[in-house]
Image 1: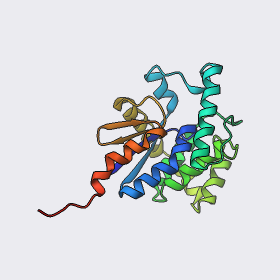
Image 2: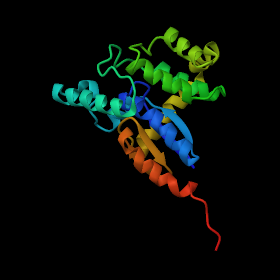
Image 3: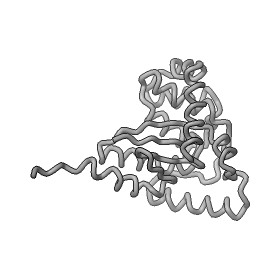
Image 4: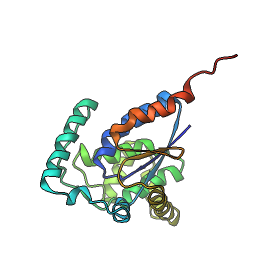
Length: 204
């Protein structure tokens, strides 16, 4: 089974759900295909108001809700990070590059999300991204070189267009086949959808 994971590297809810998504995949024997997207293009295509542009009341609720989820998931969280929102395009392409280079995307994606929401770092900075890659034991120079290359740019654009075509309107969004699950608070439905694939077949 394959999980397709559309998300923005600066998404707070993607941060809150990332570890649980990986745990669900491990429990169910599923593979995750991480597809970072340009969330601003997704918002524009779907007439969605970006969280940073929502009303003060909505933002206050969002921060309260995020803190509750962080407590439930035992995650550190700064609900009002200094470096949010920022241009996340290089960070997204770095995650893509990690996959293209065969380094694996999961550790770097998780580190980038945590950099925004737990460490107050700006993921728009190449030096910060290089440091995060090194912390993950990855070849930072190779990843950043690939991130600036045409293949990573093309993959980033394709991810975004694929997401829009599939009806994605926010981050994180998960697909199992054609079934869409929006939000990190829907991962129980994701696990339920994957559960039949892990159940042993009985002989008749």
